[in-house]
Amino acid sequence: MPELESAVGVSQATISRNVAKLGDGVTFKEKGAGLVEAYEDPKYRRRKLVKLTPKGRRVVDELYILLNS
Image 1 (spheres, helix red, strand yellow):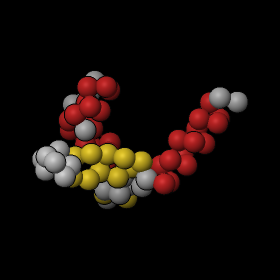
Image 2 (image 1 turned 45 degrees about the vertical axis):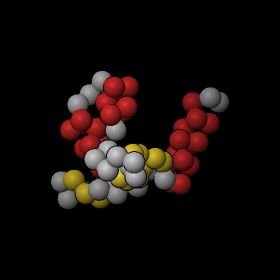
Image 3 (image 1 turned 90 degrees about the vertical axis):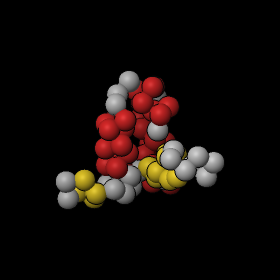
């Protein structure tokens, strides 16, 4: 997540909130979109890693096709 903070230029709290909304987290009684998965880094337990779920990969692929057609 620190790489996302640097790349996007927003705070850690904003990244966490958006990862929860894009993942399976529940914020403000709303279920997440299930597009990403956050998990603990096995080498550094305080660090969270984020990756696309299969559903997230399909959405990215569809957006890529739409934007490049």
